[in-house]
Amino acid sequence: MKKIVKFVIIFSCCCYPFGQILGQGRLDRPTFFRDGQRLMDQEIQRLQQQFDPSNIEHPSQLLTIDTGQFRWQKFVFQDGNFSIWIPQGLQSSETVTINLGESNLSFEVLASHPQNYRFVAAYSNRLTSTQITNSEQLLNEVTKGIIKETNFTLLTDENITWEQYKGKKLTMQNEDELISFRVYLINDKVYVLAAGQNYNNQDISENIVSFFDSFRLL
Image 1: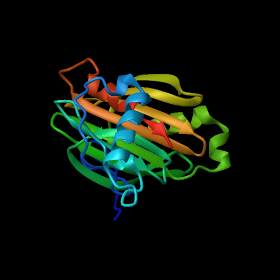
Image 2: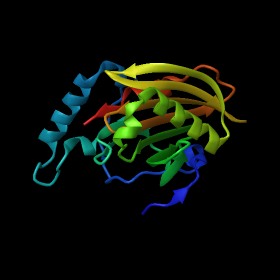
Image 3: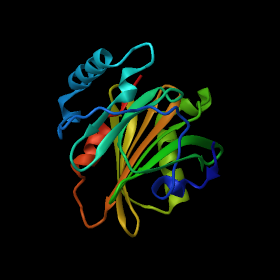
Image 4: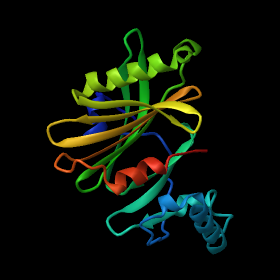
């Protein structure tokens, strides 16, 4: 079920439409994400051998990773064509619409709220050919739309690439949190990843870096 709410839910109550995807596996590997796809493939292969494939469509859906501080779950967004690992916590999902000036853009958003953190993964509806024409302008409009709807204060704004795709690396703040963003324009969708941590900690935590690093296209 979807609800329409303001984009402020990014760090209070957020959303996504996707099938439930995970299960029980355990990996005590704090550096799992930094070790690359190889370890993930090995664990999926192990699960394939452990479980009856006739009952399980995707072995990766059974996978969780315990790093001590968090238990991470792999979420696969079929409609969004991506997967990402997110720490378990209070989860919520919504459809969020932001204003781009002359048009609006809706996102499907998932939020997880483990202790002292907030993690958000979102993907937009399909963009029109006109919207995609000027990628830099589109990414700037998405940034402005997030700021307008959340009242966050923009601290840094850096143009980046993820693989061959253009994106933004943003840092924002509110009264209590320092929020890191990655915004990517990939084919006909915009992807927004965001993670908040206590504002007293000025350095981006390893957990947030691992969250960003785990983003994969299907």
